[in-house]
Length: 231
Image (cartoon, rainbow, N blue to C red; front, side, top):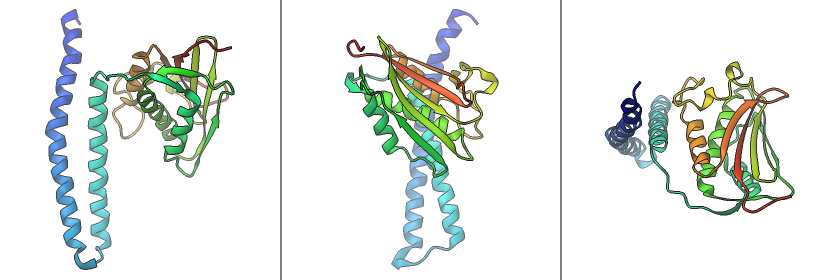
């Protein structure tokens, strides 16, 4: 591949994502509106929906939602995000994520805060998005249930946020493979969550790595420069 091909590929992907976003999102919006109209008419005057009809309407709603999420992921991957940085506590970031995330009943989510409560100067909406991508992958690695631990630590220069699951670990033990765009081991999904998360960290001088945890499972570490020295 020559240099021109390398330069054109991201531009082409960005252009394709824009077309997909427009040409598929608009029909999906029409489908959603029509679906709402049908449900309203079928349930007029308090009438109960036929269970089979209700089931299939729910399937349509679910597929529309999933398709919109795929489109949003593609657009997020190709866009350059405008960052709004401010001092923030990483302990608070983990706490906010744990409080808002819909953890399945079979999964136990454990938090381990850093007693020093290190702060970073970062766009915490972007960091929250990255953390959510990482946590989603951890939860999806535990279809039968298990433990996910979110922890915060720091050294002289960096704050570290780790997400460790008790799942099967990385395929082949390759921690870089999961950051390749469109790589996924899931039956559904396009494999852009972790590449997006890494991109958001690198835009802020941080790093994102994945490795097999010593006791089994996968550990993903988000590292960001500290906002001032820590001891």
